[in-house]
Each structure stands twice: as C-alpha cells, then as structure tokens.
Image (cartoon, rainbow, N blue to C red; front, side):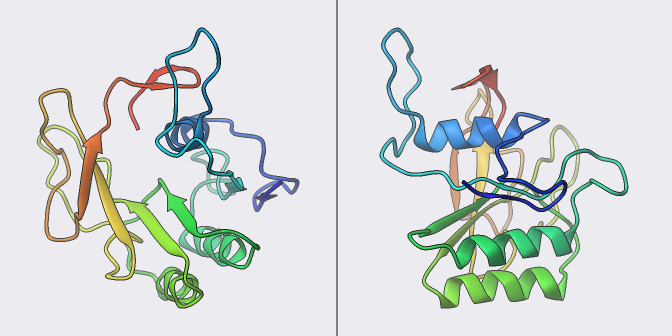
Length: 169
C-alpha cells in the first residue's frame, strides 16, 4: 500500500500509466510467457500518486511532489524513491524534501527531463539537486535527448517493454 495525495486512497490508481510503466521497468517479476523482467525484480513498490491529470487541481505541483517524497522517505524499508516527473522551478519545498530524504539515507532518483527534438535542455528538478541521482533516457540511436551537467546516468528509454506494451519511459 502507498498513498494518493490527489484523491485519497492507497496510490494504486494510475490514470496515465507512466508510473506503472516505470515501476515495471524497476520491479516486474517474471511471468511465464512474458519477456518482461524488471532490473530489480525483488524490489517492493510503494506507490505514491502526486498527480492525476494536467488540469489545475490535479496536475503536478512541486508541493505535492515534495509531500510524496517526504511521505515515502518516512516509510519503513524504503531505500530508493523514484521521481519520474520534473519541473523547471527550483522550489524550496522540493529541495527540502529531497534533502530530508537523503538525510534519512534514502536515495532519490529523478528524471532529468523529457525534452525531445530541438528543445533546449534545461536543468529540471528534483534531478538538478546534487543530492538526487539524475537519470536520462537514451533514444533508439543511443542519444540522450536531455543532457547537461545535471545528468549522471543514462539508460535505454524508448520502446522499453512495460506492463502495457512498449513505452517511452
């Protein structure tokens, strides 16, 4: 069980599927007949829902993301928090949540951004904080659409086998 900071509940509802796809890349267990196995299949996922749509009331906010990081970092057994969403704003509440989590010994892994094509990459948060491990996805040609000094790790990110088929994570 986790938490839903948008609508209440245990965080098991994912209206976009992005969080579920990322969770599968991390912790999917082998099922006969499926080629999908996560990179850490023994991991336990604690879902934290911080947005439900792009509208004003349920869209992503730094404050709700920070609350999710803070809540997750206080849960027994949580060692890694994955934040697959970004903001261009360096918000004090978000920085403080990342600092508090790392002070508790929890690794915060965050997406470096989602720029594509000719979009100029900018530092995204929480990946831009030195305490977070910043990751970017490689496209099919092995190029990282997001680069820069805040990127620390890159891995395949297009047409990745996920729970709902192929996904760009």
